[in-house]
Image: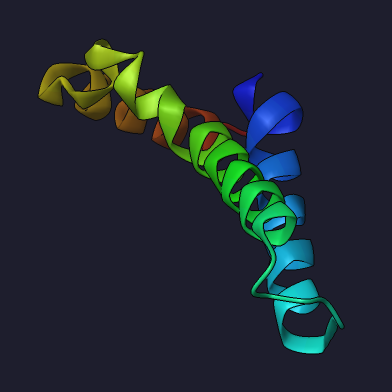
Amino acid sequence: MYSRSHFVKGMELMVLLICYRLYGKATEDSVAYALVMGSTWFLVGSWLFDQFFFNPSGFKWQKIVGDWDDWNKWISSRS
């Protein structure tokens, strides 16, 4: 559920920021440019990585192993 609402949008915004940085025409020494780009990169970072900060159970080894086993059972099922 997190993927559709945050992760995909964070990746899209990151690609757009990289393209804008490579091909965009902006005055990079202005304060407005720095504030907009800084806050937008902060938004990208929070959308991509906050799921790991606010879900501490995602790092529990037993949950990772259980999810892997469930995924393998789902992939190998014939029904």
